[in-house]
Image 1: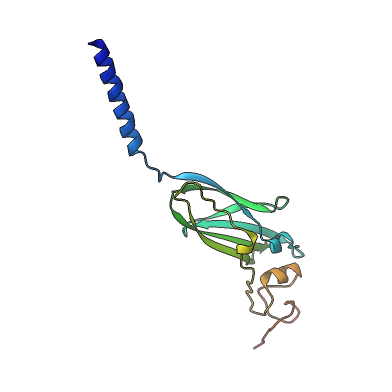
Image 2: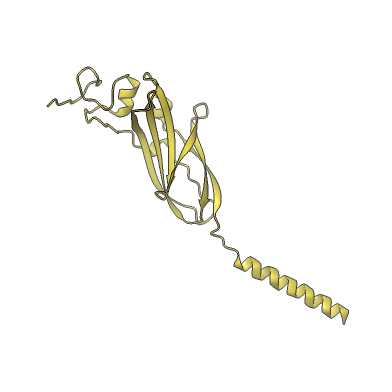
Length: 169
């Protein structure tokens, strides 16, 4: 009788374990480390204007998280918490802020929908995914080229802009 009782207890424990396992959710939130290649044009970017280059990641239009830039490895990385096994829209932005902190311009962005439902997806982007054509003063010269040449990417005034299609008036 004791043998049957022990088998019954073991069977009950096994059923309990299976019930708990079945109730677990594969869509649980997870922490994801993302490392992305810095676009070649930004890796080769030389700052002639004093300031700071920063990278940001935004998932599903949520809060922006600053990424850590490793210029030696040519990567930017961040730890993202709370991701579920689902599709996510991911935006990565590179910005330059002048040393006064008054002017921030976008240098490059990339946005992709990334499917993490299988559990083995990655938030990584390649350098060719990025748009680097931002031109805040609409003079025909990209923000990146203006920063690299020490001119003002917000001004189309003669003498402050590199070259381009400035129209005064």
